[in-house]
Image 1 (cartoon, helix red, strand yellow):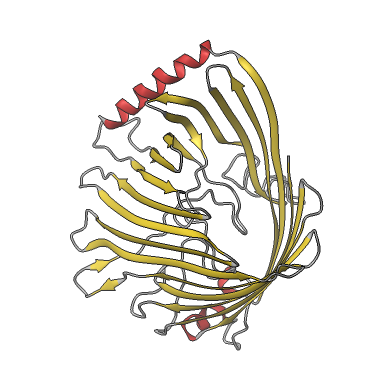
Image 2: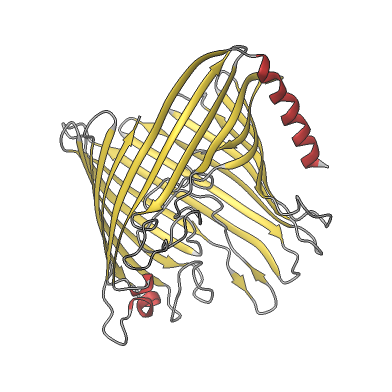
Length: 421
């Protein structure tokens, strides 16, 4: 019943757009290309792997009378060479329209926005990218490599006060039963995210997020996330801390959701020409517990855009404790440099860290060193260069073996250029 009410509301609201007059149209877009090189990464299906990824997007924003606006964004994410015919083969490597690496163009965003539509709430209806807070749990998948961009389908309502904002959302993560008369098998993502800015130079967030998966012949799986975030500046110090706790059930009587997470960072910027900044940070994702008869799956990262490593998973890594330290500086008006050192340790040795294959029971995943440069070539063009090496720990030694030879510490290099207009 809930989804039918949502659909009826969306149709009723969108029907009013035809009465609004077009006032202004703006066209924008993005061209982003990133060349990646990995060495000694047997865990990545080869000791030396090179590829270039590209995202191309074109966006149209339209403003209408009566506080109505709309956006349509088309995009294509691909790996260079995927859609060309291989020599003497005569067929595409991946097929003309197969997946994000094919030659197809996808609808990245398509929404209608109605300002002050219902009881002071602004409504955004349709496919839309979503970013909450620092994107610790909900982001749009544009960090580091694999920047295909994630969007959600549904309705978002925002209410803005003098020093606070409240967002209520209901998104369809997966539609399974649109052509079936069976029990609801959809996946839904909904919740409330609130922000308070009443303290100068500080932001406080609180949220409740719920993810539901329907099963044809069984009960739903429900994952509830409750969390809070604070970020701000004290003089030369800047800080960010976020705490989240999860609980929930699955159709299996022996598997439950239970886990906690924390992400914290403290920085200090010196009063100097290059504005050097030093920082320390820590993150923890716990909750794995298997007593032989029941399993607590541990903290789930949802749609996180925080990527702590160039090697050990993307925004999925969990069952791990991470310690970080780094330094950055604006060496010229257009060039900034950064160096980061991170250590990774498994939270529970008995259960492998999710998305990281572990060949022996040990908690040391390794230490990673990263060096990065950003060059603001112009107002619209940014160039980034980076290098990272993972000093592998005992827990993942077997993953980087090459047919019985000594393990090698993997290395990663990248070069990226981004044009936004």
